[in-house]
Image (cartoon, rainbow, N blue to C red; front, side):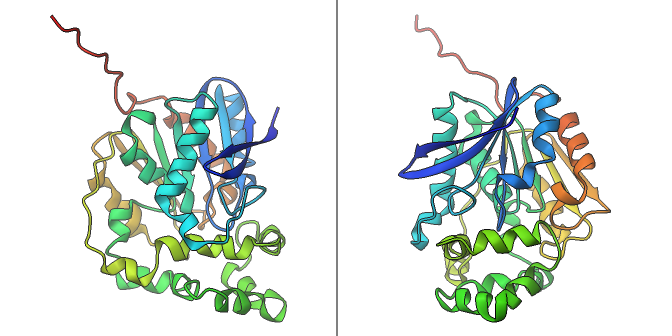
Length: 289
């Protein structure tokens, strides 16, 4: 049985869906989604013997929507996930992410190697690859620059019955639902603030920082019809993964792989989670002589 709940963490209310019993799996969505993105995966994973938790990340769905740009830094959102899992008594979940949720999942994995079992990332590769995008990737993600102008972006996207928003989204994903969700008070600014906090032009001028290796067994999934993310991001991610790495290209899917190819995604996740050794074995403190 799927149930929607809410918990207070880091001064925001995080709504989440929970279903099933067993090893925990956290499902992280991206822009402009909510936990509803995972509606095909939640029952499949629950029936497969997992405890599934799918939050509405801050700024989306039924969760709080702070209006400050700084409220959406990736470290802050990773802290939301840590606080959520701690509150729910979860120590080492499997983490699955799509779009921005994948970016958060990558960061969670290299910052919290003892607090993750398996990692599965859909569409978005490791941030180390995206730090130096090709010109083809820059052209595909042109909209990220449009989103950098507070107030102006919102007005352009809403103008003429949300025409530009509709043209950018196309008829992909839950396009009808996205329009309704983004029209909720504060939702559009909250969603755009994810880009402003993490993908501003200024961010490219900051000194590159080394990324700790990903120790968790990692599954990367990319849809061949993705118009926003190039395959280079997922292919290049292998060099950042020290644990077992597996890559799956889904031919009959675009950016929204969980919706375009739900049966394929379900099969891949069920066949991957729990099949490799976990990220890091428990270390017991050594006894002093």
